[in-house]
Length: 226
Picture 1 (cartoon, rainbow, N blue to C red):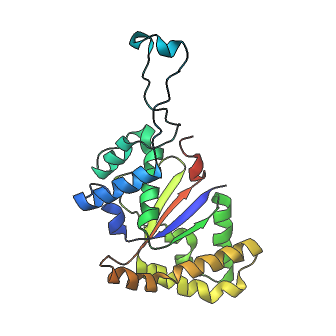
Picture 2 (picture 1 turned 30 degrees about the vertical axis):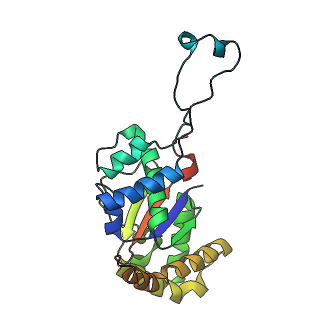
C-alpha cells in the first residue's frame, strides 16, 4: 500500500529549505536533530578483553540502522548541494520531517496507485471536472533541487487551484460511490476547505499563504531505505 501526504505550505518556503539562510538553517538543523537521533557508540566489553589495554580496543563509532538520516545528509540539503543517488531516500525522510514541522496542516491517506486511480475515477463519475481531479492537484513541478527517489512522486498546486477544487469537490460529494472513496473524499474536502483560513493565519504570522505540496510513495515512507 502506498502513502499520499498533502501539506499546506507555501512552495517558496519548501524551496527555501535548500540553500537555507542562517536563521532557517538553524531551525532545520534543530528539527532534524530532534527527529533523527544518531545512537551513541556501543559500550565496550567489560570482561577480560576490556581490561587488556588500548591495543585490544576498537572504536567502530555509532551503530546507525540502515535508512537513518545522518547530520551529513541534512547539511547537504541545507547547503543546497548535490545529493548522491544512494542518499535520496534518506534525504527525503529529512525533507518530510521539515515539511511536517513547518506546514499548517497535513492530510494523509494510505493510497497505492490502484487506490489513487479508483478514487480519481469515483470523483470523475460523481461529476467532478477532470481539471480538478486528484492527480491534477499534484500535476505542477515544485522545481526542487532534490529529485524524487524511486517509487516517489512530488508535486504542488497553487492556493487558488486548491480553493477551486474544494468548491467543486463539495458540490459532488453526495454522488461519490463506495464507502472508502466517500470517506476519503469527505476528508480531503474538509482539508482543502481549510486553505482560506490558513492563509489568514499565515499572514498574521508574517509568512506567505500556503500552497499545496504533495509527496506520494508507492512504498510507505517508514520502509524507505530499509
